[in-house]
Length: 188
Image (cartoon, rainbow, N blue to C red; front, side, top):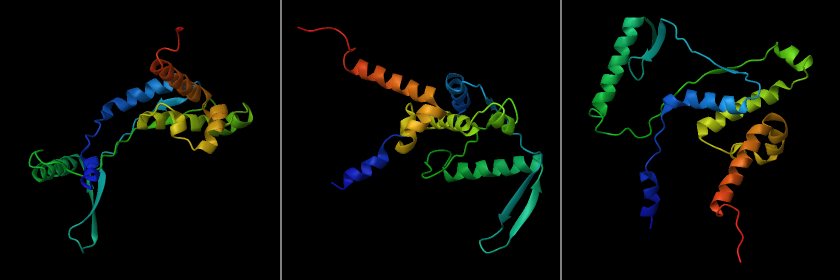
């Protein structure tokens, strides 16, 4: 029955619409970030790029500056190569990676020092909550306890993200009640 082990690789992968990540993050920030301290950050690329590559396997690296026309030409060449390798999409590419950058900035009303000293706010707890919101969103998790080491769950629940943990507990309770038939009604 060693063939059964190979079947795990054939499971259909869940498709993810990466274009929805920013709006999902915004919803979760609105729901859990009680300070409204997270702002979207726009990443703006420079007009010129530096390209470093090796002409051959054993050759030294060469560096070039690419303007808009060169960038377009290089991008088109990369897509042409991808098209040729996959036979216009007829062949799958196993073990490929896609890197998506989503940026956000955690803002404080005052400087970090003034926030800590004047307002007596633990900035680390605030940033931990933000990181937990991002992690829950990106991993599609509903319970922060799935992402936090067991030894730290109580601390996170008490200080960093009590509303996030409370929402997860409420969600788990509702699921339990619905699976047990609604939790009501008497019998005989």
